[in-house]
Amino acid sequence: MITDQDVSFYREQGYLCVEGVADAQTLRRMREVIAQLTAAAAEVASHNDVYDLEPTHTRAEPRVRRIKKPHLLDAVFWEFARSDALLGVLRRLLGNDNLRLHGSKLNIKAPHYGSSVEWHQDWGFYPHTNDDLLAVGLMLDDVEADNGPMLVLPRTHRGVIYDHHAEGRFCGAMDPVGCALDFSRAVPVTGPAGSCSFHHVRLVHGSAQNTSPKPRQLMLYEAGAADAWPLVNFTHLEEFNSRMLCGEPTGEPRLERVPVRMPLPPALNQGSIYENQTSAARRYFDRKDERAA
Image (tube, rainbow, N blue to C red; front, side):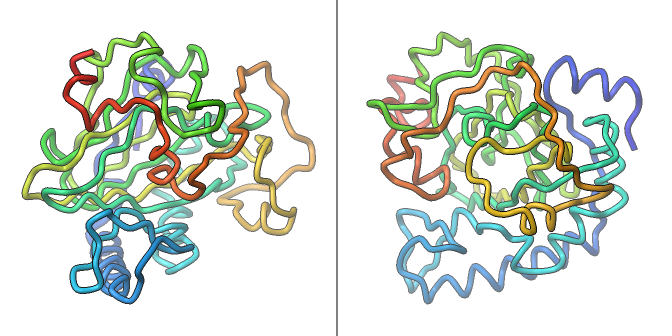
């Protein structure tokens, strides 16, 4: 599905968008499951192992901003992760036939109130023994410039690893003033439903609030080479290898000279990135004065 030029673009810029990776039947099945899960959130009053809730969530009007580990909740999400269409792109971009899922989540930006995500690098959350990892964003809705698309800073995947701490603790967000990056260079990653974005684990990215009347649901998978072993949050070998997407696991981690900042001490508000980022000292997307900076 992708050309040599696409692979070169990804390696140089740190991201790529490919249309038509998911078919209409897969999108329909996923939307049905998501609607059921969102409706069930009416019985939930606070964040738990499945839901991360919007601040305005109520039982009468359930508002979910993230569904955690959807690949464990319904087979449709795991099936797509192992589909020929997706694996064909992953093998090309990662240059490897042995691939493992690191994790999955579904970010929901409902019309008019979908939460923003502050600037960050995924690598800040889960450093590995090498950086042959990326995140896939399956667009379940048409993603346009005004409904909170992911914004990326091209080429930052080969630069420094920025500090994601505030007052000495991990907060899952970069300081938008102290990092000295030109955020005006940010590129929105847009596409029709069924498209997939791919971004390198070290690429700087974030997203603004959805202020439009259109939804933006993004199914996220994190995948990498099987010989990339996590430096934090390792559970046990059986669970680790149960996430193989294709090929064979290995007991020999590949060690590369990659920059690492450990996400420790842990965040004051443990949980999803939204919870982590509540302790960020400065925010970019929610304050006009800091956007101007």
